[in-house]
Image (cartoon, rainbow, N blue to C red; front, side, top):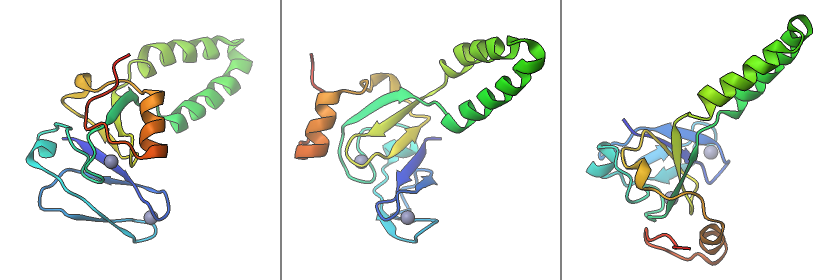
Length: 150
Ligand SMILES: [Zn+2]
Ligand SMILES: [Zn+2]
């Protein structure tokens, strides 16, 4: 099922939610401010076409790298390298290469930064585009799901 992580406009916390057409509001678990949601049956089926938070249709995909786990693994490998003569760092490099580089993708809404995981049409979504990002964020341009072609 698609996982949605809504960034709270009040405090910036991430709130996890699953698509549910019956759910119209999300209360932040930290500051209790409420975000309106508009989930559709497409969302329930894992298809991302419109943003349930801001209704925009402009998303980009990127690798879903978990920074916290990455840092923790690096610290462990660095400590172990004292006894393994650096082999643990090499092992970490390989694990990173094999595992994390291949990690699943996350789709992100340009406008409101909502994150979407387990999106079934992920491969149809474009990569991050700086020009689109600037025009959406700074001049509030709406591309309506038609990415710039370079
Ligand atoms: Zn909040
Ligand atoms: Zn959005």
